[in-house]
Amino acid sequence: MSKLDPLDLYNISDELSDEERMIRESVARFVDERALPLIPECFDAGRFPEELIPEIADLGLLGSSLEGYGCAGLNSVSYGLICQELERADSGLRSFVSVQSSLCMYPIHAFGSEAQREAWLPGMAAGEIIGCFGLTEPHGGSDPANMKTHARRDGDDWILNGAKMWITNGTIAKIAIVWARTEDGIQGFIVETDSKGFEARDIKAKMSLRASVTSELYFDNVRVPDANRLPGAKGLKGPLSCLTQARYGITWGPIGAAIACLSETLDYTADRELFKRPLAANQAVQLKLADMGRRITLAQLMALHLGRLKDAGKMHPTQVSLAKWNNVRMALDIARECRDVLGGSGITLEYVPIRHMLNLESVITYEGTETIHQLVVGRELTGINAF
Image 1: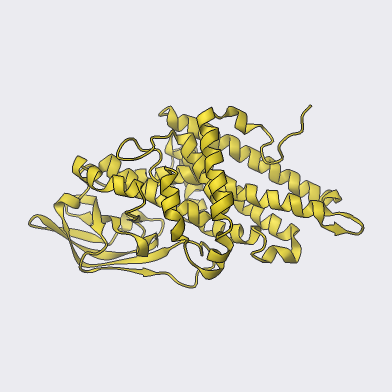
Image 2 (image 1 turned 60 degrees about the vertical axis):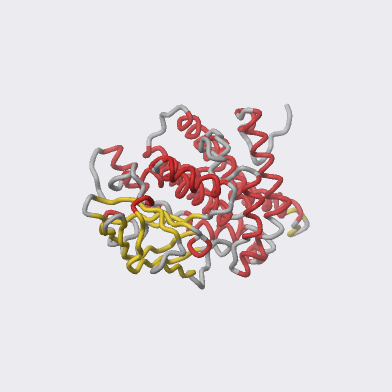
């Protein structure tokens, strides 16, 4: 029998179409040749590699699952594979594409007017217009219904006041998709970031997602024309549906981080000699590596099946919560274990586990904390809302 791929023990690749494999391999080449040489320095310096944006756009990775307006129109599994490969490089790179695609382009595509789609989506797909998504507030966290940001009607305009927190892409964005309370319920607005009264500030001294832009947004009587209001979204259903799209990508992304950690640890334990034999010959090490392989395989199968459900129009938000909870926890545990196996080497940026470990501490928190997703699954099982 042929030897199994240690990073694909159940031959998931055989379940992909030719197009899906081609997309994965194309993004993998970009990650290996362009992203990975830059990422350690970017993480150390605390900067996002903006120079990669044109290449990301040229590969068709922005709004890749949307139809028309310069978007690639790929299926959900292909989008998942894109997220997996990008996060194999760094969670910050996947976060950039996830926010641009699922949290900014998707609501314009799903809830915007035709004029809004034509005005914004082609430039966003080309990487010429970067977006950010303003839902989370400083006091709100996991409770978006406790929103304080508000907009009041003033003739043909809206006057926006409030603040948003933990916003990816905030200070590099040309537009912000901002959710605000109005007299007619929560509504979404396309806010141009050069508007008077708009301010974005970078959040400094982060120990996680250092190769990503994370910001605070402030709105001081920002005037937004009604033409920039998303007409198809009323209430929390709009922003929550955006989060479901983003969470779907996150079910795939951490698999890439876990694969990166396991791949490097396999190489390290094969080469590293202790007590006159390779570290990989130690039973305790093999038990750890085997458990990593098991957990990655389960996550791969879950993500693939979820993608097929999504493409068939059968995906349920609770299924996304289950996969986000399982797969991010899997990746974080593996990154921590790999860091330990590498010993002292594991705390340096010469190796990937410490960087992925720190990033995943954010990934397990954003787009719904682990506890929130556990409670979503618990509600589905019991029929009782424990929030």
